[in-house]
Length: 211
Image (tube, rainbow, N blue to C red; front, top):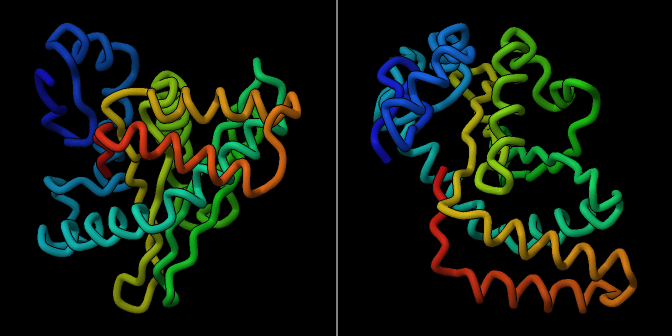
């Protein structure tokens, strides 16, 4: 990576030219507010200390590792339920307001996709930024997933978007291929899907994914 936006500190670029193009394409309109919607380790948002931000990201990443298999199975079923040329866009919320944590997976609907009800009370104030994140996820073609965390900040629940970034689209492409087999009837039943997902995750275990 050539660098990161020095404003919101949330987006990475392969070159200076790419960063300039993104800025001119509209990032300059959302840069300052992304700093509050997205939880980045270098964010200047005063609500949390650096240590607290790092803790939340680590907690979310460890939880994701434990539920990745289930998320992938859910993703395959959602992909298989739609035509191959119209894949659904999924959103995953890790809710730590109650323990044990609850993971919600939603299919984004609408044009542009609406903010899911489970986070609307917090994110609606950043609707333009949400649309920008959805657009970036689509453009990522499997290299970015929309993840979020809900956690108590004092006595008030707060939501931050923490995208899952992957160094390649290999896992997503393999899950999409599996969904095609499910749709055609070649793969049937929960056990067959679980076995296939386990094989995909084992084959691509070297693919780096980070929150």
